[in-house]
Structure formats: C-alpha cells, structure tokens
Length: 210
Image (cartoon, rainbow, N blue to C red; front, top):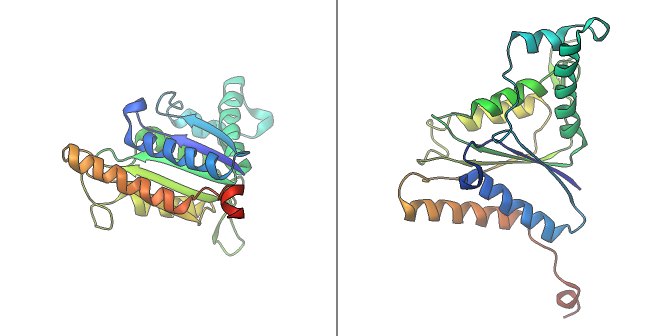
C-alpha cells in the first residue's frame, strides 16, 4: 500500500501530532515492510497563501493561463495526485486556537477542486472523487475536548474529507498536552495505544509455526 503523510505543525520534531504520525508510520512499516511512504511537511515548508490570484489561476482555462498561473495549478495538481495515488492517508493536525492550522486550511483549499476532487451531480448533490482511501487524522491539543462541543475541528474535518470522498476516517487525539507533564504523557500514550490496536504487525514465521 502507498501511504501519504501530511504534517502540518509548526513545531517540527517537538510536535506531538508529528510524533503520533512517526509512531503510526513505524507501525505501518512493521506490518507492511514493502509499504511506500510519502511525507509532505507543510508546517516546515508551507504552501503559498491561498489568495485571489491562486483561486483565479485554478478557474482560468488551461490555454489562457499565464506562466505564474501555470505554476500555481501545477502545485495543486501535484497535491491532488499525491492524494489520489495513496491508499492510506495520514493527516497530522495540531489544534491551534480551537481549530486547524492555517497552513492545513490552505492545503485543503488547494486540493478541493470542482471536477477534480469533487463534483455536483445533475441533481445538485455533491460527490467526492477521492474515494477508497483509508484515512487517519492524528490530532494533538493542549486541553481536553474530544467528544464535546469545544472540539470544533473534528466535525469540520469529517465533513470536509467526506465532501472530497474520504469517508473511511479514523480520528485519534492526544489530549492534555498543555496540562502538565503527567497529563501530556498519558495523552500521548493513549493515542499510541489506539494506533497500535489499529495497526498490528503480522506475526513472524516462527510465531505462525508455533
């Protein structure tokens, strides 16, 4: 399977969401030694801000685009191709001020394209075109909000990903990251346990023969 990992924290190796992604990738490699892993870190290398020029480039007919518009569309095409080629997608998304980072919102804007990643049926019903993906959303937040009205990010991401066709989505949260060392360690440990339960490495040949 091809696994695409999208990191979006600005904290680099200090990021709890990245640490969860690293843990999941390690489990994937154990379970699937031949797995192909592709990582894009939009926290370390943010995408250009999604502005009017960006939207204009995506809506301009191909034969009428300027050189700069072509470059913008090529970036979007690359991001979309990564999504469509992956069998498994891992989004590592920290919670900033109750919601997702600006750089991850830009990423979603770059890949949400009418006729490419979603379309409207003749009846006006939206249909996502990024289908058949196993998706993990790994989040980390300073407090504890999972399953409460304070968690405004999870419902948004669930709706947005479903709009693009990604409905097989598992959310795993490390909570309490700013509530002291003990709470943070417990939050990460619980999240790792959930990852381990979902991605168990296959038994070795010796174990299978026992």
